[in-house]
Structure formats: structure tokens, C-alpha cells
Amino acid sequence: MAEWVTGKVTKVEFWTDALFSLTVHAPIHPFTAGQFAKLGLEIDGERVQRAYSYVNAPDNPNLEFYLVTVPDGKLSPRLAALKPGDEIQIVSEAAGFFVLDEIPDCDTLWMLATGTAIGPYLSILQYGRDLERFKNIVLVHAARYAADLSYLPLMQALETRYEGKLKIQTVVSRETAEGSLTGRVPALIESGELEAAVGLTMNTENSHVMLCGNPQMVRDTQQLLKDSRQMTKHLRRRPGHMTAEHYW
Ligand SMILES: Cc1cc2nc3c(=O)[nH]c(=O)nc-3n(C[C@H](O)[C@H](O)[C@H](O)COP(=O)(O)OP(=O)(O)OC[C@H]3O[C@@H](n4cnc5c(N)ncnc54)[C@H](O)[C@@H]3O)c2cc1C
Image (cartoon, rainbow, N blue to C red):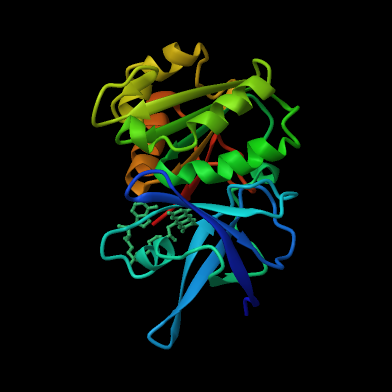
């Protein structure tokens, strides 16, 4: 049984009408970068709980979560209404296997995210451990509009910090925006545009691909990489080239 502890909201930052970040202080157990917590609120006498990835590095006590308000969602609109000082329930033990320990060595590690699923990668990159074994890292954040790329300043700061090892690329699907590719991630891989934009190739010889977020993006990209690049899902018992986490 998960152990729940009470945390306190210390900051609520709205990036757009729907996208926001919550910072929480809570006595949790140590987690691994890439893992998620469960947040819960008492609604009509019952605890409603959902999974949310940590954005902060594990050694940072400001527990940060990046959320979107799902219209008519049961929990996310309530989380969006929280104010600094409010209490929130959180599981003390994080969960999930979307962590570097599960990723085999390779030259180029691709980190592909849609929407709020940029979180696990930001935790991994802010922590910065166990990345020596990759020559290149590519962080791709895909959203509908450029205004939804909430963590672009942090992505840019990380790119500077990693001195050439990390390349960042943003993608928008519903408009054209300077610095971003336009379209959907699978189509941009299929056309070669993503690789051309970052100057690196994605193949079984040199790459491992992490995929996180919208299940449609994850499934379509996996299918494309399987069909056109012979990439397979990575399992502990059968090493492959793709590791994924679905948000719903
Ligand atoms: C491992 C894991 C990690 C997750 N991490 C995050 C996170 O860091 N940030 C985050 O915002 N959500 C995250 N989610 C999704 C989150 O757990 C909830 O599903 C989401 O907040 C909706 O809850 P709700 O009660 O408001 O909606 P519900 O009433 O439960 O409605 C669920 C529906 O909302 C939609 N939905 C769920 N998540 C999203 C999303 N992120 N973007 C767009 N539509 C969505 C889907 O259509 C889904 O069927 C994660 C999910 C998993 C499984």
C-alpha cells in the first residue's frame, strides 16, 4: 500500500490558461530522475489521485510538477485551483521505470516529449548524473503552439550547460514559429526533417529513443521506427532501441 504524506503547495505558476507548474514541499522518500509521484486531493469525501512526473532534480527539495488542465477532468482542474499554502496529498514513494538505469549505452540518446511529458527529461538533465555514457543527447519538446513551450528557457539553459552535448529542438503542430519545426513528431522523423535540424541520425547502430506523453505520438512513432528503421522496444530480457511512457 502506498504511503501518503501531506505536502504544502509553495508556488503555482501559470504559463497559459491551461498549463501550469506546481511546487510542493513534502517529506517524501528519495526518488530517481524520470520517476513520477501520485498527487491526491479529497473530493466529495474520497481521495482522487493521479500520476505526475517530477520535473525537479532528485536533490532539489522544491518538488515541481508540470500540468495541463484537462477540461472536465476529475483532478487536474482542482489542482489548477490550488494556491500557495494549500495542502496536497502525495505518495512518499515515487514509481516508474522511465529512468536512465533502464537505458542501454548508445552514441545518441533521443528524448522525445509531447506537452507536459517534458518533465521526466528535465529532471534527468537537471540532475546530470550518468550521462557521460552518451555522446549526444537530443531533447525534443512537441506542443500545439509555441506559447505551450513553457520550459524553453530551462531547455536553453541546459543546452548551454552541456556545452554541445545536448541539442534541443522544439516542434509545434498548429502554427509555424521561429526556431520550431512544424508538424507531428512521427512525420518529422519520416521526412528526415528532425534529424536534419539537429544534425544527428537516428538508427539502430547509434541511437536509443525515449518517448513520453501522448499515447498516439508514442504509438505512431514506435510503429514508424519499427517499420522504417528496424528499431525494437527495449526490454530487460531483450535489448532494443525504444523506451516509452504513456501519460494516458
Ligand atoms: C506515468 C504518468 C505520468 C504522468 N505525468 C503527468 C504530468 O507530469 N503532467 C500531467 O499534466 N499529466 C500527467 N499524467 C496524466 C495525469 O495522471 C492525469 O491523467 C491527468 O492530469 C488527467 O487527470 P484528470 O483527473 O484531470 O482527468 P480524468 O478525469 O482522469 O480524464 C482523463 C483523460 O484526460 C486526458 N489526459 C490525461 N493526461 C493528459 C495530459 N497530460 N495532457 C492532455 N490530456 C490528458 C486523457 O484524454 C485522459 O483519458 C501522467 C500519467 C501517467 C500515467
